[in-house]
Image (cartoon, rainbow, N blue to C red):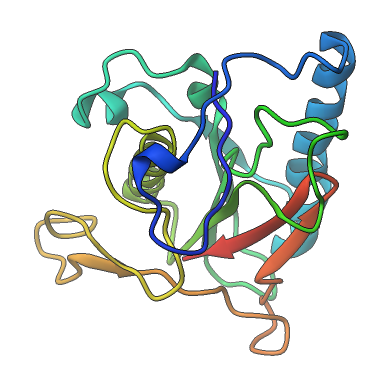
Length: 212
């Protein structure tokens, strides 16, 4: 099992405790119902509100990026994380991808969490691209895998913050691309442009930043 808490500074791997079970103070069935309500709130209500439409498709995080990072048997709950694809809208003339899962409050329940703090890792990623692109899903899956392994002590590093520069290890999308890094920034807000959305939103389990 795992439970991770967002830190605002660099996070050494030993500072991320990983409880093995669902909190015992809550009935497992009640915990599952509470957890699924949080997931549904994020994916079925908040994301469509933010991004202007429901997702057209979803892809579950596979074991492949974990294997490339040296972890052959990732926690099965890692593999419930998703990348959602949101098609263009009249206000947003491009495709938007968003992760769903890193803000899950694993290891917490309503009695132990503080909704003023971050929920889970405290962030999800978004990525804007001109048209549907498999590489965008691959990049977000890789970023999720890295962050989950950092948070649970399998990789050294820190949880991403705004203005972090991410080396990709090669050109983005195609060999001809000149993009070899990603800069982590807050998203455009509704005051910035017609397709803007909040840089932070609240779940009953805590606060969540949208990054990239």
